[in-house]
Length: 507
Image (cartoon, rainbow, N blue to C red; front, top):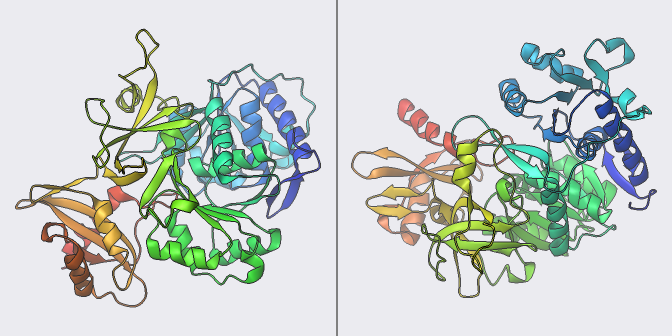
């Protein structure tokens, strides 16, 4: 264990050392077993980020249970879906959030554990989190091995309700070791947790901090000025965010006291526009930028070494330690440099598949056809659905999603390529490219654009695109106040066509 007196987690209510956190998680895990929870039972955690949340995650994993972190920003019907789909045997939440779920959960059918409950609130089937975490329970954790499931992370699909990706103990441990290897995390680091713990990158920050013995500063309901204040108060050295969050942070008022300790900033969950990257490098002049790519089905996948950022603009880098990234044709053969193919991830970070969805699992998780010798056990890899290519040095470049590639005027077109041009257009703050059916063209290319300030000159933006793109790639511009977002802060691409329908209805 890390030094028991080393500070582990800081939230807006207090702080806890590694020794106290380990004891709390151990007591809680034994109490969970004492409630009658069986091996691999799912424990849904519907809480804001807090010391209690982190302790619950560790307790469930230590007990041989499967933790299901739920983004607190989700709507009640989405939470009900996750609780029902996962078959959760226990729900850890607050009294207020439980009331929001109405009659969707039955205390007689599952264990309810409330972090805000006092003894006067406890009734049959409902338990006090604080009492369980303080109890001397004789319960013994279930035996588990590294390939057992440890968590289910629900992520948005292209259609329908969220789907659950099953993460093993091995995934969590190897992921932490891999990320710490390239980020160089040490016990001296102070990591700012901005992302939801239901998001693979958010949960990874918990495991990487713990593996390195670093301090983790938990932050809820992101407001840029509050994040800046946390950086100043705690000497934050490491920040990871998605592009929309970085846009907010870049616009905040950072003083020397808030930015001086930052030694690295990392981007995940989407392309970081060059102007935004330049702003952040100016804001954190002593920090190294890490541009990362990951898919929940493989936890983490690639990163671009900071020394290559200027030499290889637009690259998503190379495979992280303990992983190999292949670029394959539909027949499973390897693509040549410069040839577009599907990104396929192999190694110990490949997850266990989709919960309760064998058809989707079989589609995405498939055996590799090429092995170094005959007779070996087939190795499962994950086909990402992302189209990429490599340069002559093996650096990867994102081309687009296989299911988001646009077919217009007979051409296959990458939305990402058009977005990269829009990011440099005058007056553009954010942009997302999508398509809708068109009888003449096959698909009509559109771009939802958020102005950097004031009214957008759409014609000027189109002229900018016309200078840098062939005519068949120039999009129709739709000015919007904000792009639709998923609960994790990513662009909600399946909902983009609704922006066009709304504009057409108002025309």
